[in-house]
Amino acid sequence: MTERKKFRPVGITILAIFFLLFAAWNGLRLGETIFFWKTLEGYGGSPLYIALTGAFWLIVALILFWACLNGKAWGRLTAFGGTFGYTIWYWFDRLVLQKPHANWPFVLAVDIVFLLAVFLVLIAPNTRIFFQRDTHE
Image (cartoon, rainbow, N blue to C red; front, top):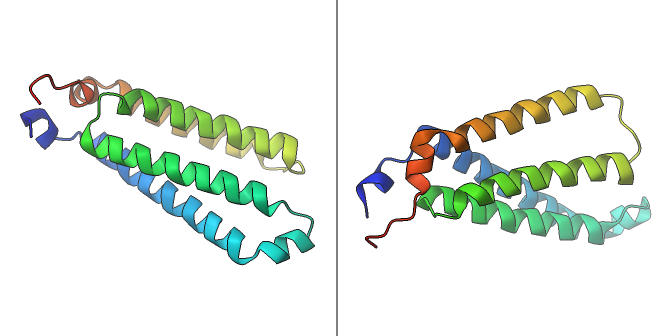
């Protein structure tokens, strides 16, 4: 193990924990969808859509968690992509597939703050160094 990988930046550790919690959230979403499949169908929901998106984001979050912990060279760009991809999917789901919600300004503000925080963590110089490809492995 190289010296740089022994000292993971605090921001990356926090981001990795966030990705792990996000994976748990989507794993719970997937499990609950399977468990309450008939109930969701009874209320006119789409359990297949909920299960597939839950499984997809579970897998993505686990990959991001692993990449952040291990400082994989592709992990930084993947974290950008996964974070922005989830945000785009969330707003598509919220605006197109669901009934409108009154609290959209608050959710938009939280999304902007969250995206800004992730962006700042991922562009920090110590983060760039942590994710550099190690040529000695």
